[in-house]
Image 1 (cartoon, rainbow, N blue to C red):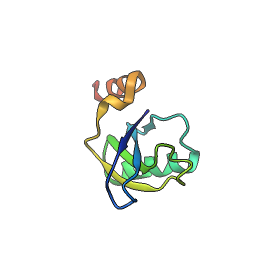
Image 2 (cartoon, rainbow, N blue to C red):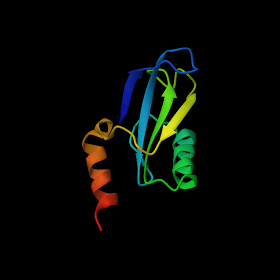
Image 3 (cartoon, rainbow, N blue to C red):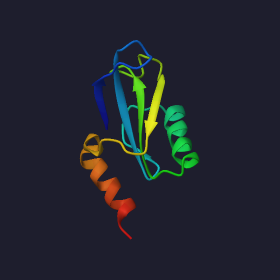
Length: 93
């Protein structure tokens, strides 16, 4: 799932989209395989189970999947039911 929000960072002040990754699952259906692989690699390299990865534009594909930043403290509300299930899977012993 994703969160579209206005932004005033270096990419021209346009909108951005945050993709949530939980436990290796990228929770957005339209993320292409190469970007999905990159997000998984970023979570591995950062040793982070939960990661919000922000891309330029409200349609990241149209913007060329331009990475803006990532956070280990994303807004978990963007995950909807799939996010809840993924969180339950990684947080349940």
